[in-house]
Image 1 (spheres, rainbow, N blue to C red):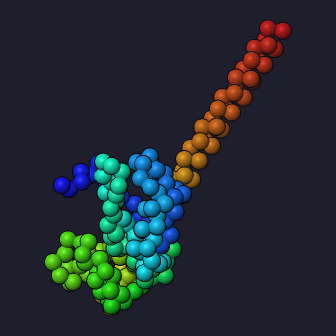
Image 2: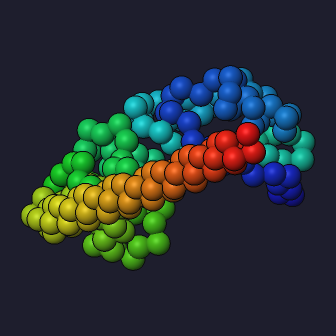
Image 3: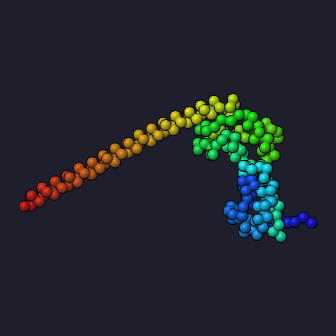
Length: 202
């Protein structure tokens, strides 16, 4: 009789480097499974993928035994690795931070194909290229010029927006200054009036 799954947990852990410390211990500890056993089994199963971050799906059974399935590294991780990046573009497709080759895209698509909703390698490549575009990574000879032009247009729009914001801020400052001058003039007029009244009374 098949064991009944009590819970499923998903984690992303560097290959071969699982330890009972957080985040592994934080998420799996309360479930009651043997943390050291999980770490040992995970590290053994992933030792040939050192350097990669691997998603893992853990099925925990009612008797607190468990099984797990390793997934392929996230597409974003593989793209950053191929491009030599620590992080993706802050502005997405409006900022080109790296250029990689179609061959690199194909290699990533071949790794990710089993986890993607893709019928063939071409469809998988299209999905990976979309992810790359959103990360600011251009594909040499495919969309390199297009993304460079898009990034330049975005930069010009940003500069224009900053210029408008500066003009608005300057105009608002003048209005505030003008109102302050009016208040000063009113205050001075009130003081003059009070002085004149005192002289008249005297």
